[in-house]
Amino acid sequence: MLSKNILVTQNLELVTLIGIRNCRGGGSAFAIFSHMDSLTIVAPMTPAGVSAVAALRVSGSKVRDVVKSLFGERAAANLEARKASLGTARDPQTAKVIDSLLYLFFEGPNSYTGEDVLELYPHGNPLIVRDLLQAIRGIEGVRLAEPGEFTRRAFLNGKMDLTQAESVADVIHSANRAELENAHRLLSGALSKKIATLAAQVKDISARLELDVDFAEEEADPDFAGWEARFVSVRESIQQILNSFHGKASLSKLPLAVLYGAPNAGKSSLVNALLGEDRVLVSNVPGTTRDFVEVRLFLPGGEVRLVDTAGIADRATDELDALSMKKSKEILEEADLKILVVDGSDERTGCALQTKDERKPDVIVYSKSDLRAASCPSEYGALQVSSKTGDGLADLKNIMNAALFKENANAEDLWITSEREKACLEDALAGVDRVLDLLKNNPAVELLAFEMQLVRRALQSITGEISSEDILQSIFAGFCIGK
Ligand SMILES: Nc1nc2c(ncn2[C@@H]2O[C@H](COP(=O)(O)OP(=O)(O)OP(=O)(O)O)[C@@H](O)[C@H]2O)c(=O)[nH]1
Ligand SMILES: [Mg+2]
Image (cartoon, rainbow, N blue to C red; front, side):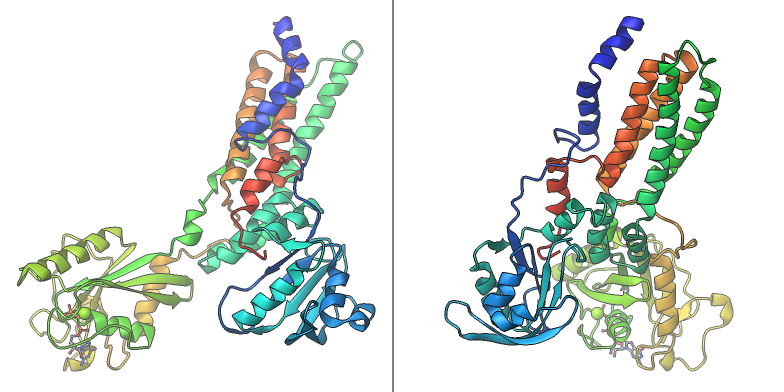
């Protein structure tokens, strides 16, 4: 047993490297490597297209030169940090006016990236943005930024750790309020704090262990039982964070609500009424909607995909009708919320529909309530709406919102969204299990020290205290240009 311990201890670094690799496929060491150059970078921060104002960002040591080239020597000499200036930007080559615009200077290290940063706010004409970008890129020592490169520099310059850097993308792409609030909690360092506490606990026990190794002869027996209890609690904390994992997919996948029902039930009218605009075709001819139509609807909890389908009748009238009905049924399979629309003006079924619908609606809506002389008795309990008068629409939106967006019961809840962080936590957990196993069965202190170090390193790699070029590459490649 002893020889095995020694062997492992001798190969400590080698095995540790493998441990880190597992934590995020690839990578070669613990130190932070940046193969990126230190040129000044520039990129638009706003998407291409026409807007009132666009924004560009420049970061690096050449920022003052950029100001001088675009706005002249005086502007560069008078440059004050965090003070907006209005200037006329000219092409440094041709002296042609590009635009009259506002710009802001942030002096490093007090900036997003930690370097000198210049933000420019030209008019939102793509031609202006392109000219400005070309002019800045043409200045010596400046190049176009890669996706996520500003945030990457912020990380490398110690402005934020990796969990925060990753959450920047979540803040930008959150599709609903709960996700956005979580992303903000991650950005403010809530996960970093939890991880730091765990890493400190492991470090504390490791330090005691090392003392025991150093003074093995003088000290009493190491406190294995006490350590076991503490590692059990570390394990619980890691497991808790792991259980909170929600994949990134949920950030980009909007929930899907599908309206379906018999032809002429009033589905398309309801879509228009919910949107507050005439987006889909409505007529009194049954079978108006043929293909399903998807629109985006904003609810208080976030955006949803709302789909209007072709009416589903008992029997198809022709081949096209059969095809339309088939497509309606297919999209229903994918729905997160199935809303059955029943023609409420039909006195035969309007109130008393006993749905035998095998598609099991989540919500039943009785349409055209304005056409019914008396409202349905309350025992039918279903929602009555009118697309003409707006009756019941607010209730329907509330029901959809509650069904599609889970209320965040505890505003302090935090969940992780990064596969990388999950992999690191899994490595840490496996390490903790090995530590617990050793403490129970074979408390050889060298081996224990080694396993504890692995746990600590897996935890440290979550926040980026330990990180590699490959890891950074894969994180920031998923960002947008300009962030
Ligand atoms: N008075 C009244 N008429 C409505 C209301 N909703 C729909 N209608 C009428 O009902 C008819 C059918 O409406 P649509 O919205 O096209 O019905 P649909 O369910 O989309 O029909 P298909 O696409 O054929 O399946 C049209 O003449 C609408 O004007 C409502 O709330 N009140
Ligand atoms: Mg329709």
